[in-house]
Image (cartoon, rainbow over all chains, first blue to last red; front, side):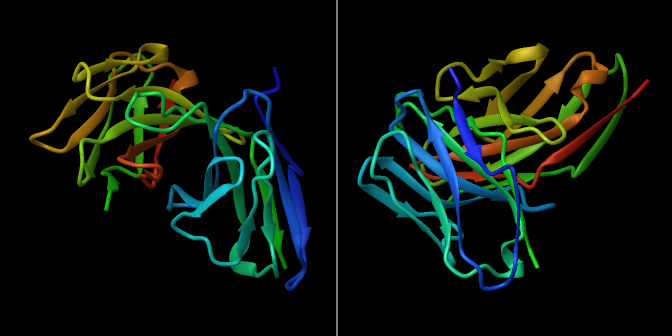
Amino acid sequence: NAGVTQTPKFQVLKTGQSMTLQCAQDMNHEYMSWYRQDPGMGLRLIHYSVGAGITDQGEVPNGYNVSRSTTEDFPLRLLSAAPSQTSVYFCASSYRWGNSGANVLTFGAGSRLTVL
Amino acid sequence: AQSVTQLDSHVSVSEGTPVLLRCNYSSSYSPSLFWYVQHPNKGLQLLLKYTSAATLVKGINGFEAEFKKSETSFHLTKPSAHMSDAAEYFCVVSDDYKLSFGAGTTVTVRA
């Protein structure tokens, strides 16, 4: 059981380049999300999805795009990379989201992105 | 809107002494509250969660947290620190599909 798998682990981009961070989970989780982690700021939600075909914006969505064509995959696209997007990115998933108390996230190992 | 304030950015303790990490939250609803731990260069791992059941919540590795609605607090404690507890800890609040993370508290454990 692989859990949440993120690729690549490290990436260096030049300003203006585009790329996709991949996230896959094999737990049949409905809820998936992307966060960025910056020193002293905790984790901030970029986008999330409550099921295939459904996505919504989080706290810091600008400059990022997502889609959810399958339950397993939730890629994060950087459309035109900027130095401000240098960060560590985490994908996380959960079985479901609601008031039942099942809101426990499983995190991937992270992807470290540097934009020059 | 929801938010979390972790009152200490860094806590240093001696091995075998108690650990206290402080967290205050604000939420419009009855929130779910969590503590996550992140060891260096690793992803985040759930320590414990509060979802409106018992106000004293026990987690993994001897950690526990107490939900105090009147104080809007969810402080994390451990009676006796171990060297392996050195990590960054995040308090998290959720009252809908979005989670809000605190800025984190880095714990250093002295031998």
